[in-house]
Amino acid sequence: MLALTAVVTLSMLSIAAAQDLPVAGLNSLTEVEFSQLTQRDPNPLGEKALAIHPEQWKHAETDHFIYHFVHGYVATPISVEAEFHYRVIAQELEREQPTTDIKSHIYIFERPEEWQQFQAFGKLEPWTGGIHSAGSLFIQRNPAYKFSDNSLGHEIVHLVLHRFYTDAIPCWLDEGLAQFISKDAHASYQRARGYIAKPHSDSIAPTDLIPLATLITMTHPPSENVHTFYGESERLVRFLSTTDKPAFLNFLDALARHQPFETTLARFYSAYFGSVPTLEEKFRDYASKDFGSSLQQQASN
Image 1: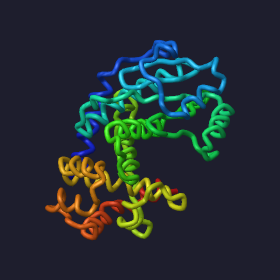
Image 2: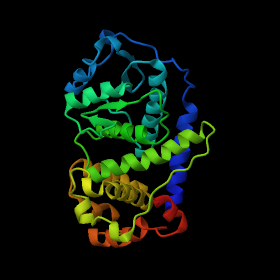
Image 3: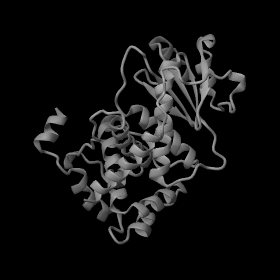
Image 4: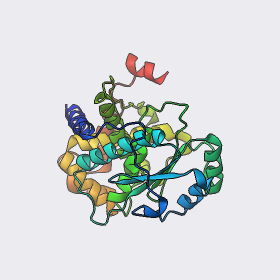
């Protein structure tokens, strides 16, 4: 019941934000000369991106983001979704825009060969389809393909979290929040435009769960069980948020100030679970809820 309430609340916020956004035409972004942009990107990867066929890049701004792109019809839907997610994230986390906030830069590559060239410049893994680095986002969006998942929203959440929590938050929390918010927000974004969409949170087999003492100390997703890491992180965020939303926001703020996990847990969740072992005992049932059902088996196949 708590989980349903939280999802409904987030969906209502998402739909409200989506309905407030203007309907964008295919080329509605107004181009701005690079020299006229209000802010420059301090990220050196930005220079590397713009050095690839520099004559092709166009530029634009919205309230919270700066875009570098080739075609407006590719960048415009990205700009609409980016602003939508910013508003949803701010509402969900009950945060005001920081007074020292700077706009996030989004670089949109269209041609696969140019993305591969950027991967080489940035020394990225060859399988990388996008990267959030030091407050900037670099993505590939080939106009020949339709992108309909929550991957863009996931990366936008990272961008905004980087701005709200400048000292960084733990890896599991960063990835869990990105999954939690983007899954629900993307479904609401689609529904506001007439599509039938529901968020889906994968349950995890009890034998696959990463011990919480290990999960909360990870500094990057483990390559050997990355799917479990993302799914478990998302479920843990969802569990903590739905158990007590005000406690979760205080918990998040404390972890962003690098307070110890266990003492922070005891401080804000003492009425529910005051230690990591107690949390793990209750979380295991939640994380594996519905696992083994016909629906879950079908989704896993």
